[in-house]
Image: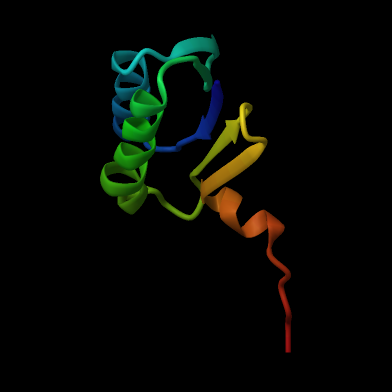
Amino acid sequence: MMIISYDIADDKLRNRFAKMLTKNGAVRLQFSVYEVNNTSRVIDNIIVKIEDVFSKHFSGADSVVIFDIGNVKVKKYGNAVHRDQDIVFL
């Protein structure tokens, strides 16, 4: 199982993202939180679509967080990537 949470500012991109999740078997838990409880092939296809199609359109304010419940992994895209990185100011 996988939980996908997103915060995407652009309405058109956000709607396309939500439709892609729904078409791939994701179930909406909240406005921007989906559960994917499907085969590993379907889950891998969703991740590939996020990485290859959507991530290049994300702005600095957008974020997508994927919680892989089965393997206890978290994948982050957009703004969410920077939250775990140290920032050094010189």
